[in-house]
Image 1 (cartoon, rainbow, N blue to C red):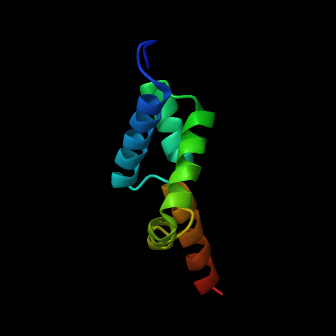
Image 2: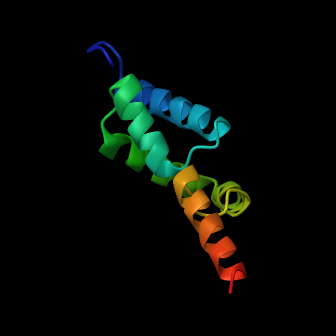
Length: 92
């Protein structure tokens, strides 16, 4: 994605901007890494490194973000299976 004339600093700013976009879409780190690899051709190690640095610089934000998003998000299929388990529990 980056051409040879761009500096490493501008590439990192680009990755940071893309991570911020992912946060606007309520993505967690894993989803963001996958999305940037697929859609922007950003290596996962680069996204992870920039994400970690953002976490260090913005501890309060990320603590709140994780808390508000339940730490780890569940997929619809896991929500559905846990719902069916709880309804099974009520049958007893």
